[in-house]
Image 1 (cartoon, helix red, strand yellow):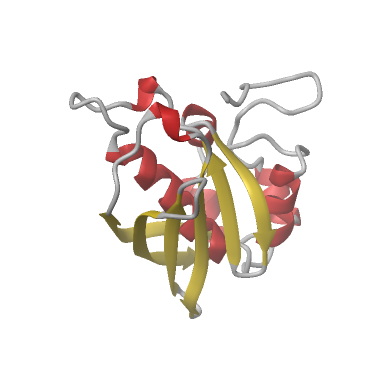
Image 2: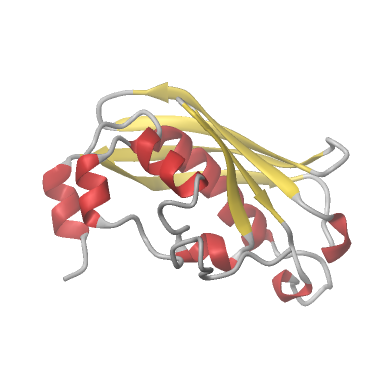
Length: 172
């Protein structure tokens, strides 16, 4: 299943608008994406990802790999797994942030334990917070196949930054 870039009912793929970042908590931003009120991030559209569960400290993405995600060896490239787990883990942290506060990945580590092909169907990337401080948070994630088998797992360190840094980082 390919996620469309835009439909009549859903906004086009785009970063969260500055106004929404300043007015909505991270949890409300992600609920708006899940509910189709805000567009998905361009990377999420590229990787056929959809936000399917959002709660405080936890995010779940579904994604369907296709042959366009293959590496030269004929299996799904690790970048597909990395994009899904980085998104799930990082956005799990975002669910805890107030309006006007952002986050970004400092580092992450993934362990792939099972290969994927385009025949696998929709996989799930689940991210949850391990620890959240004022400026640094950690999270962990797991990717599972439709049968519930582990495909990959990982962890991340996330930087939390205030509205002033958010304005400096924004384009334009």
